[in-house]
Image 1 (cartoon, rainbow, N blue to C red):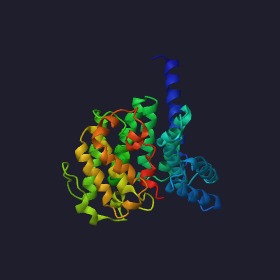
Image 2 (image 1 turned 180 degrees about the vertical axis):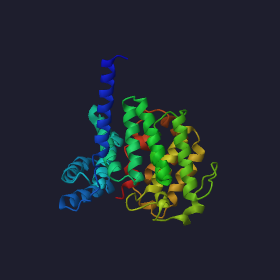
Image 3 (image 1 turned 120 degrees about the vertical axis):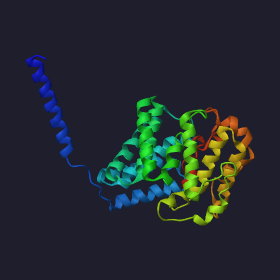
Image 4 (image 1 turned 60 degrees about the vertical axis):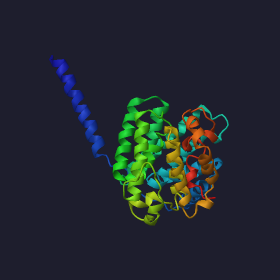
Amino acid sequence: MNIKTGIAVSAFCLLTSCEDLAIHFTPTKKPIASHSKLAEKAEHFFWDTLHQGKYDNISTSTKLLLAAYLENPNDPLLAAHLGFLHIWKITERQRIANPPPEIVDDIILAKKYFADAVELQTNDARFLGFYGDSEMVEGSIFHDKRQQTKAYFTLKNAIHQWPQFNYFTAGYVMTTLPKQSEHFQTALDWQWSTLDLCAQTKINHNNPDFSPYLNLETQVGPQRACWNSWIAPYNFEGFFLNMGDMLVKQGDWKTAITLYKNATLMKNYSTWPYRKLLENRIAHAKENVENFQHSSASPDKSMMINSGYGCVACHQNK
């Protein structure tokens, strides 16, 4: 190495070190909760939009939340709810006649806002799980294998932090994969792991009847992710709808019927807006094996994530 080259390399290393040091010592954003009237209005409208399944109100809700977030870009909840609106919009795009190409921008924005939420509130595993989902979907859309691999490990980290919540969250985005793919099988294994954790015992894969475990229902601690809540009034029903769909896609439609029927065990099942969707699944489980294995199937013959109700099946209460 000659003297000029050596000087250039040394200068590069020095500049790189300076950059790393400058970034390292620059203060990070700190979480600050919003209490303004605008933030309160935006949050109220967000929950009203989600709980009533008002897909057409997503744009208005996004504008309100974004205005509130620009007012205080240190609020992790505002960031997370913006992310959720964008991921909801693209997940239920089947509601739009001929979705335009720019619908993919919503997953890019979802990833950005969930990244903000994770940075501001690092101990909330829900935000990390949703960030991993958006990272995975974006990588899939743009055929970026490296990003998909990175997303997989983000989701693994989220599962480690809160398995009862994130086994489902991580596996849900993989339900669109071919049934023979390794990641689809992993996603299905994660759903079985969720059942084992929620039942606090090993579930019989041949007869996954969940009725013996209803007495374990709780609204506190990590186990609360197994049950219905104010945030997700039909979380229990939606979980079994999706897992049943996964078993049907795999070809095991008989076991899927048992899983579907678990959704009917909840005391508020009769008020679930999507109970007819589930009952139709039970009636047509065998013929849906082929439907679910073809991504071109119409929304009414598609898996939960592609049905047009991929978010509201758990969150809509009216």
